[in-house]
Picture (cartoon, rainbow, N blue to C red):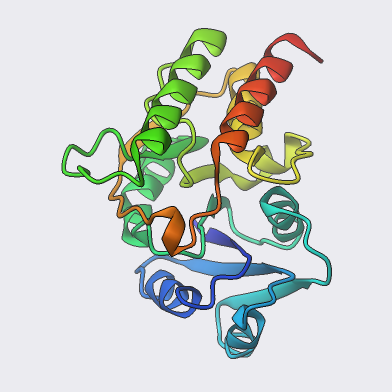
Length: 228
């Protein structure tokens, strides 16, 4: 099976090149689809160097639209059987894709999330508020949808491509994560989890998500649970 690694990027000049090199070294059949969301810090110039490299596709937004919008742009052009989201920082280890993919190739999975909570060696967190927010969102998800999940806001959401496209995604920003989780749960799709490594960065190092995104995530989970 072919994996499409979808990388939304916005102002990550300090990490994006190393991240893409790490993804490129993962020994899986794959393509790497990068969507630059109108970066202004030199990221776009770095990405120009990947345009001609085999296995890479680079797309550009001329206006910043948000992470969800960038993912939806990339989803239109991916050609793999399975899609996974990869942020352009170095918080996650793309070699964890190998264990996640095994559940597709050997276990018939349609959706696999990488869980930071299931790997006990992950003792660092970006901060107590970030940690508490992640635990709370996972608890709300279990309560609303009756699914067993330990890390709802994880970046590593790996989903069958046809299934992901069929969800009718509308997210513009960070609410992509709860939208995908909610719509998979509503479909009755079993979400498997695999322990993954996590090396968090702090806000001072460029972390973009904030408490407002957690509030919006709760709203999205409620909306798709009780709305149409």
